[in-house]
Length: 323
Image (cartoon, rainbow, N blue to C red; front, top):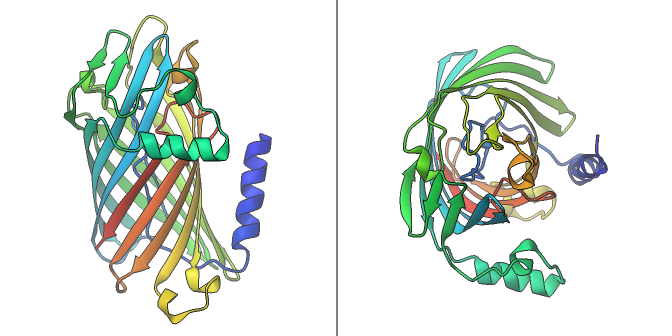
């Protein structure tokens, strides 16, 4: 285990010990990036089966800059995501997800450069002659875009089955299938059916609740060149926590507010000598969730891609409505 993972887990435990509360809905994010043409779940799934059917909609904005011999990606990505979840039995749950994308020049370049300058950080964007708010997307000879465009994502269907739920410990298994939609030349699909298998573990200890996911995917082949080929098997790890904001700010106004934190590890999507394609990703996500009532909530979330900062958007922020 790397020092980065050790430090992240230690900080998470220190920040949430004694403050957490149980949660039954996922921490949703849309950190999908156009190089990630294979299937993976962009949110942390709980081990608990929801009692009623729900719809979750989110809209987010991501900033993307990647440059290498085989890749030039400099654009903003707007994502509209729809998830429908329905319990089939008290132990079984069905979910359907469909994302839709708009690639544009974006508006985050100057704010991000200002933050980098203020913090004294020199990033790849500044080192490699980045131009503010341009749109260039080229991947070998497979993808070439210079103008804004809409693109379809991949329909993802999952079944979750609760195996154990006693003594504040829940354990579930889930399986899913990705049905490819859209054109591979748009960058959001490999045109192949992919499969997913995972486990979800949720444990409450006094007032602390943790959710952990481990996921394996078996993916159809995506060949961008002779040297850049998608991995048939990928793996992912998610760790999430939620606690009441009133625990930190004891005011009546914060009664319905929750703070969420998630860590995500994504293995490399491609086999390649080009690190822009063959690097794993560490993700941190922060969210504020306001429960309008027992069934509905609004959530503001922010994702940060950390070291090595490849294969994913630099930052993503968005709004989720669950009802």
